[in-house]
Each structure stands twice: as C-alpha cells, then as structure tokens.
Image (tube, rainbow, N blue to C red; front, side):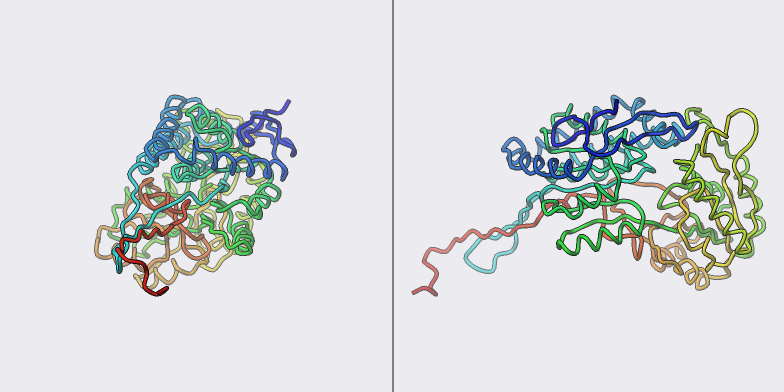
Length: 489
C-alpha cells in the first residue's frame, strides 16, 4: 500500500498516481507514495490560506517563528544519519555527500531562524507632518518546486525563508525523489509548525507543477530545475503578474591559467565536474586551459580522474555513485555518442564501469568522461548534459578566454584558477556568471545570494534578503499635524 502525503495538515493518500522511489545503485524499490493531483493542490492551497489567517500563525512574533525554525534545524540534526541514508537511497549520491547536504539543510533552517527575528522594518525620512514607515507582510501561499539532484538542501533553501517570512508553503519535490521532502514535512510538524502551513505534494510536474503555477491563490513560485520548464513557468506567471525565482541550467566554464597551482586546479576541476556524478547545475563542464600548459594539465587531469572510486553509495570510500536513473544514463550516453560524432576524442571514460568488487550492471553507473578536440560551438560543449562529462578547450589570452567562456546561453557559475589576483578580479567582472569561484569550486554559504544570468535563471535565493522575496513591502504614514488638512476648507 502506498504511503500517504501531507495535504493541508493531514497525512492521507493523494488522488494521483503512485510515485515509486528506486535505489539507483541496484534498481531495488525504496518505497511507494500516493502521488497528488490537481484536486490535492486546491485543498492544500485552501488550507494554507486558512492556516495563514489563523491568529496562531498570523500573529506569531518574529522571534517565535524563528524559534520554530531553530527547532526544525535541531530535529534535522538529531536525525542526521537517517536522513542522509534516505537521501542516498532516493537518488544514489554517496553517503559522504548526503551527510553534507543534510548538514546544509539544518544550517539553512538555523540561519533563517536567526534572520526571522533580526530583520527590521524601516522608518523612512519624513517630508511633511507625518511619520513614514516601510513594513513587510507575508506574500501569501507560495509554491516551492525542487529538483531530484540535491533534494534535502534544495527543499530547505525554499522552505526556510518562506516560513521565516510568515508564508504557507506547498513543497513539490521531483517525482523520482519524494522521500526526503515528506520527512521534512514530518519534521516541520514535530517542531510545531501549525497544520496547513506546510504541504508536501509529490507528483508529475506536468500536473502538480502546472496546477500550482496557474492557481489563482498561489502568490509566488520558487523553482529549481531545467531551463525549458523554467520558461514555461515564466510564461504562466506572467499571465498572473506573479513573481518567481528561477534557478535553471548551466554549462559553467572552469579556467586554468599557466600560473595556477596545478595540483590545486586539477583537484578543483575534478571536484567541480565529477562530484555528484556531474548531476549539478553548477558543474564545471567546460574546461579552458591556457595553451602553454594544456598537455601537462590534461595528462594530470586524466590520470587523477581514472583513479576515482565508483561504486556503492553506502561505502565511505566511494567518490562517485550511480546516476539518478537508467533513463538519465541513456541520455548521457547519447551525448557521449554525439561528442564522438562531432569529432571529439574521449581521453578517458565514455562507457559504463566494469570490474570486480561491485555489480555495476544492476545500477545506473557511468564512468567520468573527458573529451578533447571539440570546438566551443559543438553541441556537446554548448548543451547542458547534467552528467559526468567534461570538455577541454585551449585558450591563448584573456580576451580569447572571455569570448569563449561567454559564448553560451547560460550564466550560472564559473571557476578561475590563477595566482594573479588582479587578473582574477578583472575576469570575475567580465565573465557572465552569477557565482565566480577563485581558486576553489562548489563552495556555498547560505548567507551569500545565489542565482544565474541569461538562461540560467532570474532572481536570487539565500542571504538575508532571501526572506524578502516571500514578503510584500507596505508603506504606513502616521499623521502628526496639529490642524486639519487645509485642502478641504
């Protein structure tokens, strides 16, 4: 029997098709949940509106709301290992990585618990006989639509600021990874979040996502996922004049100059593309190496890539687990075939792993793959693959590098490896990317805003101002004049 889902404060079967969670390492079944449908969306929205109007939530002081978020953080930390293993089974990430994601989720709730009680309204300068103020009210019931690659962290990045702002939240996790989102729903309840404030509705994006985005009582949508779906959400939101934040795809450049510390850069490039099996929007999938060190750097990179440990996600030593599904691996293989057809040379990888020690046939594994010999305008270099595939391209000077790095529809992230801080400063400003890492990669802080340029999205998440995206600004004027307004006399 399928497990229930959280609809407006009640755990009950959804009205939609069942959603099956599969362990990508061996194809076994983790569990089945009763997916939602459009009627469940209507119910969750209605109960979310009612819960927001209840004085128990509406009149809650900011420090009290912050305390609830701190409680969510504590419960996540108390269940750290359990949640990490659940996340591991839901999408196949190695256990070391899922532990880090759970810790990130706890930190996100803790951060926004602190923000909730320290954000201030403003007294604005008066230009007449009045005191003027700017205050902030919750925007309403909001939808959080999250991806399958890092659910627990992505869920927290949307849930925590929305709850801190005083909103009700309907969380729509990816259909293939519903389990952690449902556990977060239980944790929110256990921490004292009132019934109806959080709903968790797993289901097909074409049904649940569309129902949420077009619902007249959804006041805002925060979406992380593919660019094409983001375009559709933007069009639907425009019809409602509804604000959205869209964190979309990427094809991020990583740049290695001749003066870089080679060992640092090799490790950083490998981490940037092959951690998470490349299933990351900010993966550094286009590598630009200054021509003078191209051969030396490529040899070091290939050798270290071939030493990566691929296998059981539950093994503490594993660096790369399986891809999220067999279907996704099929898509990666099509891109690798395309790269070969476009004239690229596979320096390592380009196939499924083999060998003793782990039964790779049962899972959706793929070897880390490095291409050389492709031009920057090749489809395999330009299109987001969302897997462990790296293309190496040479460059000669800064102007050549900037022209190639910016020759993409995306603008999410970039990595720069150089010991010249002046150069790093120049290029960080010239390259089109929402985040630039200098002599590091994939480092994150919940206190630092994150988002993309161009087709990588719009809006920013995280940081203190992240709470304001879930609030409406309102002006108050308090008259101080001693005599009536003269116009009416």
